[in-house]
Length: 105
Image (cartoon, rainbow, N blue to C red; front, top):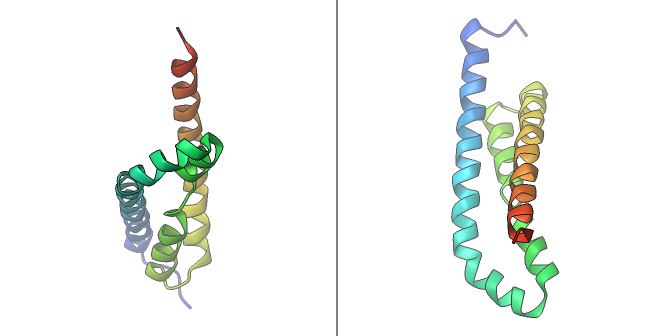
């Protein structure tokens, strides 16, 4: 196999960004669709509701999109997973800020 064309790297980055945006949109949409179920779960168990709300249900879909879009290129998948770590850190800070705000009086 030959080296990737110069534009190929940019194409991979664009595909990864598009997959991340789709992942974000699907994640927020699925949360809105599952909100009534979360409210019902909260009545029974706050822990169960919290676990359900933070489950990464869209990550497998995003991984599949990136994997199939890159024809199984491991390097592209690894780059995408590394980007997921960055977004998980951002989500952790958001949850921390929400928790601190909820505790303040």
